Every structure is written in C-alpha cells, then in structure tokens.
Image (cartoon, rainbow, N blue to C red; front, top):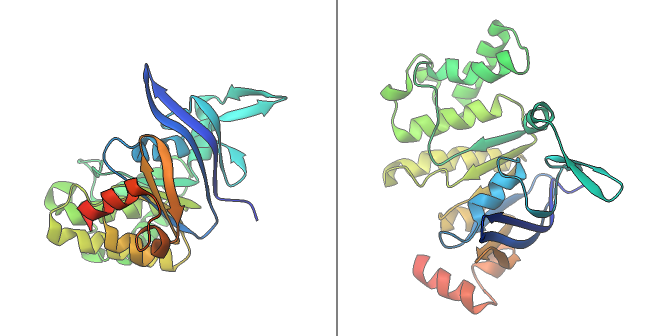
Length: 253
C-alpha cells in the first residue's frame, strides 16, 4: 500500500538556521498522526513542507505516491510550476491556527468559494454541498453569518468545512485549537474526532495530549528539527523511551 505521506531525509533551512534536520516519517492512508514537541521544534515547518507552502532544502517528500513540489528526471529534481503545485495542493486540506476566513463572505460563501473557482462546480451545487458541510460541523444555523459574528470555535469549524469542500485525501491541522478560548477547544476537537472515525488521513500538530492519546494512530515527538521518538500513543505518551520525551511530557501532562 502506498503511504499517504512519506518523508525521507527532509531538511529545511532558513538562511543559516536549519529547522528540519533529516525527517524520516510515514503515514498510511486512513491514519491519524499527531506531531508533538516544544515550540521551535520544526513541527509546523514540516507540516507546511507537506503541501509545499515551504520547499524542502534537501530530502524527498511524497503525498500519495507523488513527489511534493518537484518532478524527478534521472537523479535530478526540478521544481514544478506554481500552477502544477496548486493542482496537487487541491488534494490536501489545511487548517491553520488562525482561521483565515474571508471577512466579506458568509460562512456558506467561504465554503463555496474554492469549489466554484477551482473545481468549477456550479454555484447551486457548491451551495448545497457547503450547507451539508456546515451541518456536518454543527453549524447548519450559521450559514448566512459573517466571520465577525462567529466565535473562534465556530470560525475554526467553518475553516474545517471549507477545507473539506475540496474533497481532500489528506487533512493537515496546524495547532487548530491554540488560538481558541479553552471552552471552545472541545467543539473543534469533536469535529476532528468525527473525521478520524470516518477514515480521513490526518496529520495534526497539537498540544492537546488527550486528543493525541485518544485519536492518534501514531504519535511523533519532535525536538530540534529531528524525530526523537515515534510510535503508538501508548508507547510514546505512556512509556517514552527517550529522556527528552520524558522531560517534555512531564511539563505538559
């Protein structure tokens, strides 16, 4: 079976600063992988490399068997044109810390935008699907609300619905609850739990240890731009082998 995400020796530098220092990682279709680690460990950078929002400095990344951002000819890599990158990125949904909704569009309008302009769906078809997605994330009654009228948790659920509107094969979540008030975190995690239960392949950068323990198939602990430890939640969270993992978990659990 082709891995949904496969990383081999992935490195990323910003000038003199090497943020990723050789990441090897695989995520199977239908798996939920949670990336844990302190701030600055490279988790979000790696996530952004997966859909080529950042280009890798060295190594290889594949999504569903296709090289991310590049074409290989012989032993040389050639970066794809922006239009080709955008074409491949359509299969990957991404949800950020900040909701990035269009403030001038309603909830339903935000969700319709990409299917109409990128997938070429009719407005009627896109609206029908957008309404179904709003119902799926528990916001059927907020279709005509503008982002400013919604709580942070509601905006994040609209952002998830917007990503799902593109029918992605992979969902990336970059600390999707870190900007939320504590009482709103649960409603977003509930939507993500449902997605996991439906078999969506997900990679999640998170500080929500309970979510990682309950929902993840694989937990990856990163520090200093490398994978320190990876395994099942029971292994990594319950019986960490590495001193650095133990020190981190002692602070957050």
